[in-house]
Length: 67
Image (cartoon, rainbow, N blue to C red):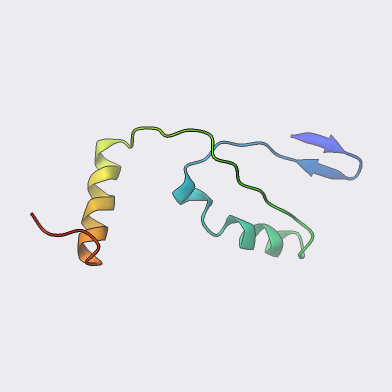
């Protein structure tokens, strides 16, 4: 956390899927005053259990063909 006058800046690394909806949540928590920026950092391997869940959901949505 970086202090900038009365403001606080937080630098964090999170998976993109976890950042979805964060800007809306931040604005709600800060009465519309909070801001959010996102910057790509790197690709990482997804743990196998999470990858299987993603594939299962995508197949259910018809976005990936069944085997």
